[in-house]
Length: 338
Ligand SMILES: [Zn+2]
Image 1: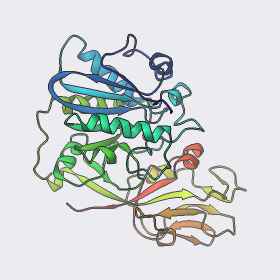
Image 2: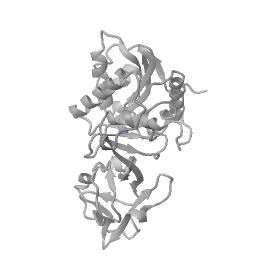
Image 3: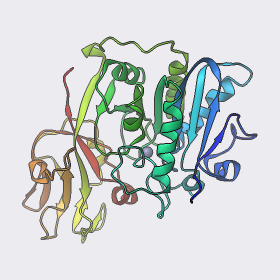
Image 4: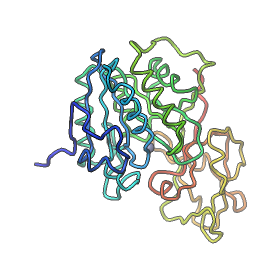
């Protein structure tokens, strides 16, 4: 029998509110779920550091809890401090670990200690009449702040637009936290820009604080002029056998070094992503949300240039080669009318 990865506490350990992300592992000894009581019993669930190099959620929660240090929380709050061992190395995840934002119920990963832990957390939280769920991330590219939802119901969009007007709806990748919690309560993922930006911390803090102080989430439709809603239509990865670079002219795929400027802009047919020297066919794979290969619907090789074939809007384009290999190059989106 294996023991669970998860630890649970009903108090804040000494030093937690001032610990840096790389100190958490020695303080908590592993992924930890902390339950704090508040005036409204139905808890708000917040997860931070599902990716170890995305500290904004932790910093926001630390500031929030400092604010309530000598006061009762307006609502119960359960916080999951996720991949603390990756955080100690300032890495998204460690090589031998599953990605903590792909392990939740609905995942396509084979069962592993991390997927068991995620199921255990959902089980524990679903017994508590959840109020809402928030998962806080950073990303590496040049992106505006936005939130993601996995259901288009009014309560989800109401919660999302409390963070900002950019909202992305997606159903793939599978196994993300917000998708698992969407079965039980309004759930959002926050993308708070790059790590290390104080504005991201303050924005996340204000949002969590607002959610904590809501007595209920409005159930009426969001007004169309209060939201820019996009639907992810493809996840784009560089093919495993393709060498890519942003500066090596010899690489099979030389991506444009200003590519992240395309994030959240509506781009036209013909927009180039880079230069292709390989003769292995298109160097990228675009997969639809239903797992269909739709590369040729979106990309073509125009005389050695990798070009977009139809109007679309990219997000999460990054210059970080490790992130591109571990996760993906970008997502492609289309505007959704509500
Ligand atoms: Zn993340």
